[in-house]
Image 1: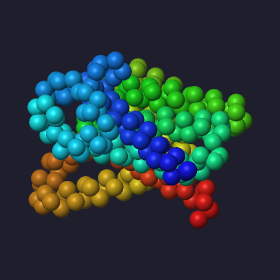
Image 2: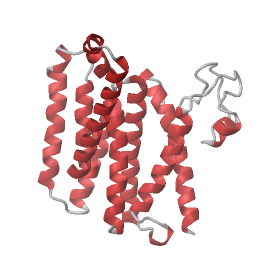
Image 3: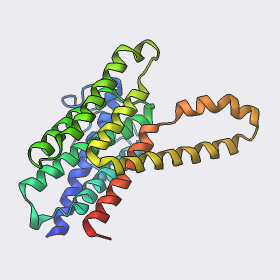
Image 4: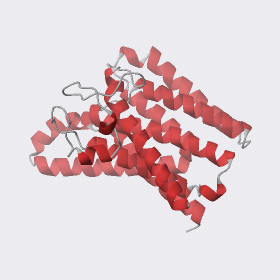
Length: 272
């Protein structure tokens, strides 16, 4: 019975993944993500039911639009599959299965779904646009406050610890509103800081710290490879700033957080 339960979660996860692909495309363009029917970005044709089946539509259509035959970017398939896998992995490491479904476990899993949604939107938008969208940051703050209220009321967690994070949210938002807007055209750094606070609230200091470390290592390796490819030292100095400004830190941070969170939960729940 549990195998069917996890298959169902994977299907639900791919449906969410399909929504993520839509949101990643539309949110930066400030387009509606709930009421406007799905359409092909190239020919603008409205997509039918058979065009919107997660994973299978991409495979059966050969990765092309049914109407204009324009090639569909693989990111759509990747995000749907990744989302489905994350839904299953989180349920598995939380020991959520058909035999032990309770209201509390469902609520806890629901909060993790909210958080996965936050990470997926951050990862997708930052990868494509090198941008931490303010509306996604606001969504992260809202679900974090909901989660803190749940932890303090239901699980009676120390409220002072989360009070500090709430104050940090307020301070960073005030700093961004009052100061940073006069000196920068965007608030990418602010978005990263808000993302890190949301990560800490949901996954704890240990997981977040390791995610930051792994992100820094990955970025260092990326820059090292890039410098080796450039070859000439003068060219490296001229391009260094441009390279750094193009790195999608939120993308690497989000991926690292998901991987480490899954690993830590697995070790904690199965005592390996």
